[in-house]
Image 1: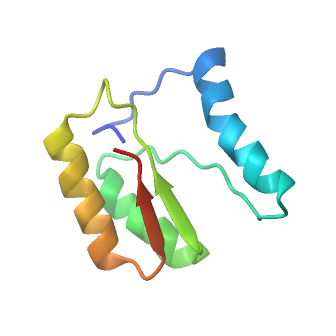
Image 2 (image 1 turned 90 degrees about the vertical axis):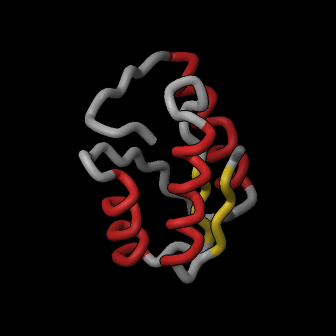
Length: 90
């Protein structure tokens, strides 16, 4: 989660994101790995959740770029406004 469109992709980041997704997929769990880039990321994420209706949303931002307070506020907003399970990687 980042306020704005900034995103730096690297092989290390891609591998870190793919590993848990591949594990879940190997257990026959349907997985979609998405990146939300928007000026208002929480609102965009809430809209995406409303459209896709997932069973579980894993919220895991780059902790070096997002302050603890920002993450906690965003996670609380997502938990309060969605009907799916939310796993916030803190």
